[in-house]
Image (tube, rainbow, N blue to C red; front, side, top):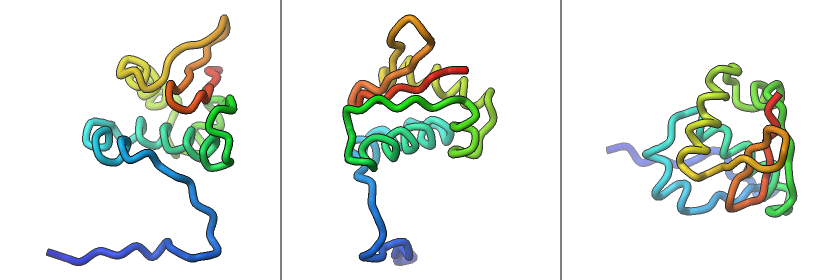
Length: 107
């Protein structure tokens, strides 16, 4: 069995905290695009030390940051919503993470 070590750690690099539940329990159940979207939302909230601040991400921005196309993003958002990891908020089409108060605007 190989011994693994990351090459990402550098003392001068900024870091984003990731909830243990995401890594320990949710990771095996999430599809690739779902995980990418959750990581982007964490980066835009917790990564900026604003866990409760709303963040609005267009499909164009999600495409650029996740490397996925609109159809995959749409399916992932619907799946994350059905799993209770994000939910709709407001009169416009917003999806909001329960834990971090982050919004994703659909366009």
